[in-house]
Structures are given as C-alpha cells and as structure tokens.
Length: 244
Image 1: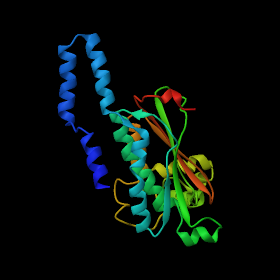
Image 2 (image 1 turned 120 degrees about the vertical axis):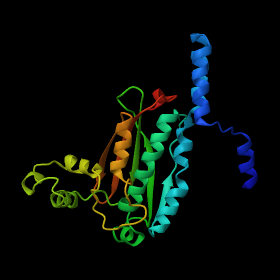
Image 3 (image 1 turned 30 degrees about the horizontal axis):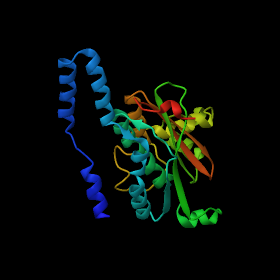
Image 4 (image 1 turned 180 degrees about the vertical axis):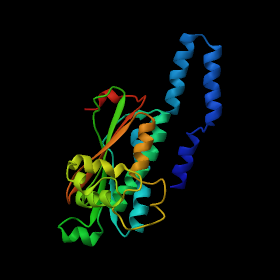
C-alpha cells in the first residue's frame, strides 16, 4: 500500500494556486491572443479533476461517520464516466457533497435494528447518480439513500413551532413546498446534537454554496424507502454532452 502511494505521489506535481493564477495572467499579457487561448485551455485542463475521483474520495468519510452513529452504510461507486470538472465546480461540489452525505447518514438512513424491523437490509446504501440537465453547461447529480425518506408531518409541525408559517397556512402548502423548507437554516427534525451538526453544516449550507455559483438543489422522496437530493451546478466540464 505504501509503495503504491509513493508511485502515485511521483506522478503528481503540486502548484500553489496564487502562482498558477499569476502564470495565467502572464500568459494573457505576453503571448498573442491565439497562442494564449490554446495555452490557457491546456492550463485549465491541468486544474480539472475527474468526477469519478472526487466522489470516490468520500468512501472513508461515510464509513467513519456511519460507525460513529452505530450504522452500517455502503457508498456505492459512481457509474463509469469520463467527466472532468473545472476547479470552481470541484471546490463547490466538494463542500456540497459533504453536507449531503452528512445529512443522509445523520438523518436519512436508519439504525440496523430499525431497518430490520421494516424488512430492510441492516446495511444502508448511498449512491451518486448522473442526470442530464436541461441547462447547457450544467452538471446534474443526484445523491440518493435508501433510508426513511422525509417526514413531512414533522416538518410541518416544526415550521409552525418556529413561526415560519401559521397553523392555517401550513395546510395550504403542497408536499413539494414543505419539503423545500428542509433547506432553511436551523430547520431540523433531529433532536440529536453532535460535533457534526453544528453551525454551517446541513442542507441550508449546501443550497447557499450552490446558489453562490448559480446552481440549485431540490429534494424528492419515497416515505419509508428513500430520499433523493438533486444537484445542478454550472461547470466548465469536459464530456458533459455525453451524459444520457
């Protein structure tokens, strides 16, 4: 294992971001526009990261957090893809996926004995699924778990308790409108307070990060069976057009 790490390390060259951006400015300043365009495109590719590699990096995080919660959870590998993401999309998506995975482990997937009681495998699963955005230049990615789904009755009660809406108005909201409120800061139906559930963690933070770059997130669910969090994020990504 250590030998493999050294081999991979020898193939990697780390460059300080500030120095890299300085080099980009120098290319634009000193080279003719046609040469600069070609070189800048090649430099952009150097900063890109394969989507498959990005999501694979969360496997240990999922196992660690699941173990601390007394749960057994498997992160299924992403389907085969050759999509690579630019540095901005990689940075934002990395932050967002931490929040979404945390939410699935903390709130979505049940404890082994709970799952057994309802006829599920004691091992829960989380998986990433590629989609196809209707917006050109956008990546569509779904994070799905096979947990308990969402308790919209509990969300409605909490919205009334927090005075987000009145008892009269809450009944006028559709299920989709209620579910959308899970992205509100501080709105959680969990009574567990942990080192992972502090300020800045959660679905509200994920939505804020996506909105900052023009992205979006929405939720769907099947009660007692699953939850899906659908992300769309703009990115200068290679091979987006190949998604079907």
